[in-house]
Structures are given as structure tokens and as C-alpha cells.
Length: 254
Image 1: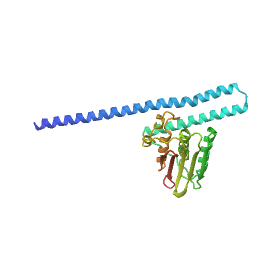
Image 2: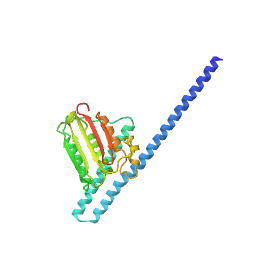
Image 3: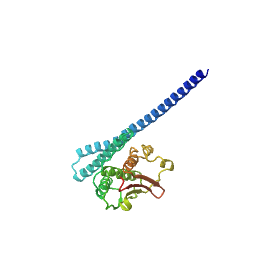
């Protein structure tokens, strides 16, 4: 009798474990499906815009011989190409992260960070000639890091500020290597980030869910992953006065 009761209890426990495992698998599959649906929908929408801009530019170039106008059209097309390149880079890093491979950096010998920052800002100034980007860089100390990935981090934070900040107000960018760390911040004026969004701000597709978003919603997620790769972190603070993103990483522990 005791043996039968033991076998019955064991059978119930086994069934319960299998049911829990099945429920967990169904929940995971639902989450993956939702992630795939969001990814495909937003990616398709976001790629279509710069592609349409390039196609329109090609048609306009065929119809005009005005050199100043051709130069303006080419500048817009270059901006679209740069946007698509950044989108593809973010998608690749997102795929690596979700597949469990993580982001693997390529560290180099110590290099100055100033030229990297200036290059990123110059690209945005050429793409957004109507926007003001104020800079205050004091980065004399060389940095051992994956400079290409850090450039992506800077680019994603600045792009986020330009997309979501007030168009008539400047974006303020600061950087320093004082105090044994690399400090980088981007601030913009405009509508503050909603409090309910702040907790999950660095998750993929969070900002992509807003109606006025102009990107995949991967930029902040990739920025946070790159920061982790360098033993650093990205933090955000938002108020009616300004929204500021701050990146910090140790110079001796990246």
C-alpha cells in the first residue's frame, strides 16, 4: 500500500513538473513570437524610409543639372545611407546578444578618444545641418577600448537625443577622461520620458513602441550592451527641463 501511494505521489509530481515545463515553454514561445513580430514590423518600416529617400534622390538627380541642388540631394542620400548602416549594425549586435554570443570587443593599444567623438559629431552635423550640437570635450587621456563600438555607443545616444529632443533646442554633448574614468553625456530639451518607460528604457523596442519614434528602438539597448562590454554603464535622467544620458567606464578596467 505504501509502495502504491509512493508511486502515485511520484506520478503526480512528475505530471506537475511536466505541466510546469510545458507552460514555461509556451510562455517563452509567445515572448519569442512577440519579439519576432515587433522586430520584423519595425525593421520593415524603418528600412523603408531611408530606402525611399535614396530612391527619390536618384530620381531627382536624373532630372536636374543644378550643381548646388545636386550637392544638397547627395548630402541627403548620404545621410540615409549612414542611417541604414547604423540600423544594420544595431541589428547585428542585437542578434548576437539574443543568440547568447554576447558582444565581443576588439581592444587596441591606448588611443585618444577626441578624434572618435569629433567624427561622430561631424557625421550628425552633416546629416542634420538644421540642428545645433554643442560640444565640450576634454579627453586628453588615451583609452584602451573597442573604439568602433564606443563610437556606436556615442552615435546611438546622440541620435536618440536628436530624434526625441526639441528641434529648436541644441543637443549638448560633454566628455572627459578625468577621475580615472571616461565620462560621456548627452542632454536635450523637450518632452520628458514617461516614468513608466524609465524602468525598461534600455530594453529592446521600448522607445520603438512610441508613436513618434523614428528608429527600431534598439539604439539604447545596444548602447547599454556596449557599456557592459567595457565594464561601464549607461544611466538616464529625465525632467521637464532636460533629458540626459550618461555613460561611464573605468579607464583601467575596460
